[in-house]
Image (tube, rainbow, N blue to C red; front, side, top):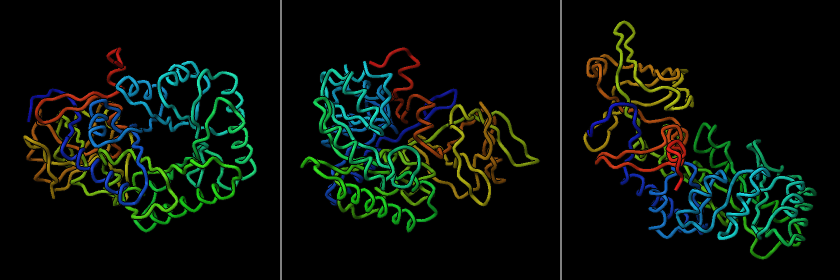
Length: 372
């Protein structure tokens, strides 16, 4: 393995591109257009891999992220997060040269945009189909009709469609439950579209969470899917059944700083500021990461017990088998697959491959004082 001195996030480009191609094929086979969500990787370099496969439309989760990718030539961007009026000046600048779609949740925002927009933009009405995070309830038909009518009367706004995120799939306990949520989401979004009157002919339904998009074989009535996590996957997705462990494309490498034989635990330099505090429950134990065997050109799964079971700010505690305890010495690096790759990538701010190449990330660019 190449020389490193501190916690580092490794990427395997071959696995990333395999995941991209698989999801693009899924979209093609099911007839849904794909607008990949770039909030997981947030990398210009990885974004260019999507371009190589013909992708021209993307979703992001912030205005800042939209700016970052617009500078790299992305011209059709949906900001799949409720519009923040305080960023109107940035939105106006973005819309001068790009197709920008905003996400709206109320009539007040429509009025604000009518008064402050300098350029025409597209808008999606966000629908809450059961996640209970943000969005208008799928059965609030009168309010949804009012919003659709106000948008279409505006000379600044173009009604693109309705948008949802079935994030409740991440808490599902089985593939069957995920597919049930997927079908429920489709039915509720389709019901909204059928109920609304006087819609434009190009009105679309946009949805997409990685568990549903990875497992479902049918996307009836769905025009656009927006999965994001699939580009890397992670332990949570593997445990849900969205992917195999071999599909996880990122891995933390953390140095061993202490060993405690009496409890078969290894302490690493790698804590919540590197991994986040996302966890899964496995046999009633909180798991913050899954141990793998680092090798010169990647990593491989091990049959030995090894889980990251406790995190503080910089410390991580790993519970290991007897043989793994003996294998790792102070100063050695341990490979750990993250529970949630999106958060780990955002905290680390860059990627490294096993040939010594670095890959950008928006959060890392911000820390360095440049997003160019």
